[in-house]
Image (cartoon, rainbow, N blue to C red; front, top):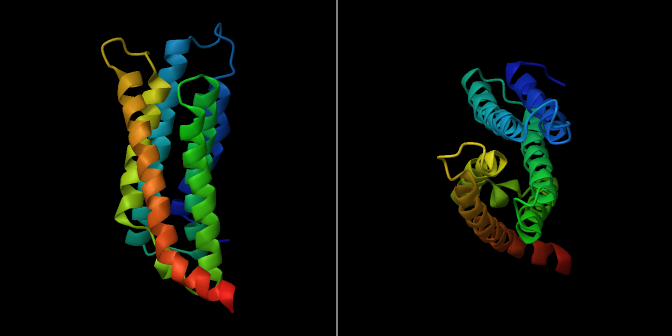
Length: 191
């Protein structure tokens, strides 16, 4: 396993998951709800920024690796899934939205793994639709974490709209990737 700054940033993102989740289970006497919400939202934003930064550094410093390419999306999916489950527990996101987003991530990850195994990874490479979906999620989730912590900022409303947009883009991107992979899937299943 290569060890460099981009991979360390990815590991940092994974380590942040229990810290962000754990904040929501601390007693209010340790951390008030508004402070907890702000700290969790800031931590999530920092994690999202490390996602962008580690990829940029890996490309810039020519430190890309197969392990980094594997670990980076795993870290992203773990962080998003963990936080969605917390938001679901808090009643800040709908169960169907969570199921759509987490289900798509599992489905497309499995599809990409299988396509890579048969040498057809390029047909399910990241597309613009997936990037829009990720952007909508990465703005919606901190807003939903903030909830009503900042009185003048309608975080809950903005997050609620954006997470629905993210769910729609999630379905759209899943259908897009499945459509691209379908000829190979049907060819393989008939032989």
